[in-house]
Amino acid sequence: MAGSVRTWPNLVKRALFIDHDHITNGGLIQRQFEARGFEVTKFLVVPEASYEAPNVVATFPDFSNFDVIVPMGAPWGVWEDGRIGNWLLPELKWLKNVHNAGIPIFGICFGGQLMARALGGSVARGPKAEVGWYPLMSDDQSIIPNGPWFQYHWDRWVTPKGATEIARTPIASQAFIMGRTLGLQFHPEVNIDVLNSWLSLESGCVEVEGEGLNLEVLRAQTIAEEPSATIRAINLVNYFLESIASADIKPV
Image 1 (cartoon, rainbow, N blue to C red):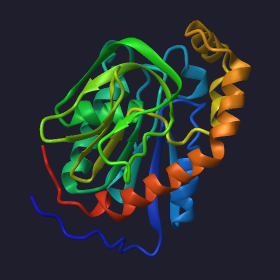
Image 2: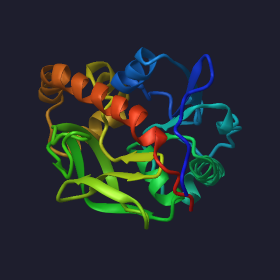
Image 3: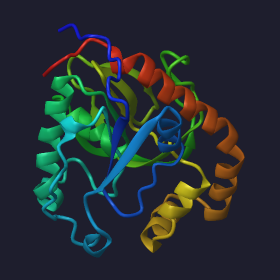
């Protein structure tokens, strides 16, 4: 299905960032959307008071009122219907509908997994976690360089039929494009502020240390990587807005 070139007709371009938990931080990606003139609206799905009991009922905003949707990460699994199904299943439906309508979607980690499932793929627990800075195997480094990119996940997706996988590690698919949707497993938004936000929870520290990483070494690596990570994030958002957001629509 051919789509018209997206010309961003609104005087104010609007991006909806879906924060699934209270420690989510748009970091480098949100900064570049704002630099490109987007007014960013943030919607929190699970409030801090419900973090330990996340199966809340969420009243999502109308996704069709936005020019771009950015579903962010989460500490839960896209396959955990019994744990978070009250909001997970409605969000999957919303995302499928806006994908089919041609609204560009930039999914990060849990958000990328959401898009894999919403578009007909599947998500399950992976054989092992990827936490920290990892190089990728990219099919097109003009879109996604080999990195390294920051990883923080235990799950992985099966790429939807009709999507094009463009990057991977030996453990998991890392990026796919389908129509005007970009699904990412890695975290291009990460800088030291984002990492510190995640590590502000004791559970985050336990998770990282449980994978054999030293917290201070990881912080030092993140600070050292931030200048080049910033450039990669800027280029990725630019490519998304200039190419993927005006691609042909591929409904499911």
